[in-house]
Image 1: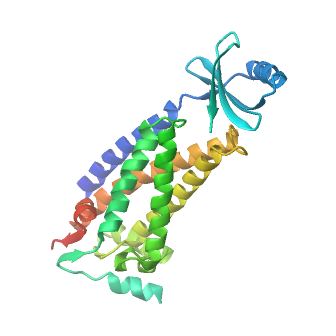
Image 2 (image 1 turned 90 degrees about the horizontal axis):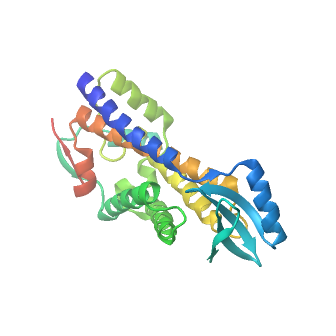
Length: 88
Length: 186
């Protein structure tokens, strides 16, 4: 019985470790507040309805709506839009 | 009435019993593949993540229908949520007594309801994240992620419990989910 419990505990902690690691791995993070405000203001001026500003792989990733369409924008460090992606 | 039914299933049979029908087994293992793929490997903002998500939603919808019209051990009436039965099962484990169940055990049943409900939350929040109304809305994304984390925790617990019960009761439960047959050894 003890052996069964031990092996089960080992197996389950390994699994839990995997789950926790995959949770922590989520690479999107909220961008810092000042930058967020700046990006929001900038894009709002260009007619975007900004929903969310994240950091991903060193770039700002913006979720927004424009002309009733969902878009994802990627901005580099200098706030320049390097990629726009329409989501349908 | 349902309690009496559940109790009458908990006999001590020797030999083999066909319990899981083919659709239940296909449901189980395709869900394993789809959930693992989406939770651990496929990027959240990719098209394929959405398609796998729709598949999971469809599989869960099938399972709910099958819970009403399916084969004997697939029906919800065969494993109603039963807290009394579940605590009895805990007592039975604690006191080193063995009682074999043909279909789902009371604790197993609670895990199934937990997983089905969690998958519904994951699929619904995931779908909503793609709608205009919830596009880029952070709390919906957080709900989606929290539900996925809860599902991962539940899956880990489910696997641990299956291993534990297999060893304790000397019934190869993972094999039964492959072949459909529970083999009770005495």
